[in-house]
Amino acid sequence: MSQTVKSHWKAFLFEGILLVVLGVAALILPPLASLAIAIFLGWMFLISGIGGLIVTYWARSTPGFWWSLISAALAVLAGALLLARPMQAVLTLTIVLGAYFLAEGIATIMYALEHRRELSGRWSWLLISGLVDIAISFMVITGLPSSAEWAIGVLVGINLLFGGSTLIGMALAARNGNT
Image (cartoon, rainbow, N blue to C red; front, side, top):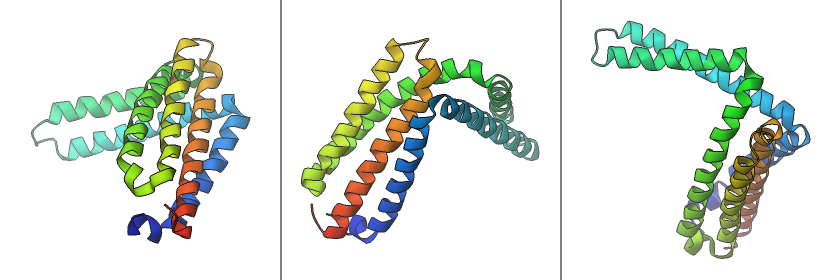
């Protein structure tokens, strides 16, 4: 096991526990978690867009001004739409999230394969996490539009739960010096 993982096992453990707690909360109240995520994304887009508009105004004589202005304005528009109609945005976000989990599942599988030498038996947990992400993404995408009501909260909850459990397992293995 790498010295970096061993020396930071407490950080991995803390992050894992935090992710598990947030995952359980999202699984208990998936519609509320879905709405909270839509609102949070709306604020992120709105704030980043406003920041982009300010920076673009200050740097208006630099090349790419118009592209930067358009990008910032689109972020403001996306944020405003998400905040104005978060329930209607949940369907679109569900489609995007389903695609994201598919991509994340593939990336996690590749990560597991890269680490199988270093983590020996523990790499299989990463592989399982990636496979679960892919399976969930197909369930949500094929269940649309009815899956939009619960999908975001459940998807995020399951992802946080598995990701947190994986980090906890890696942290405990690093603490004990097991590979």
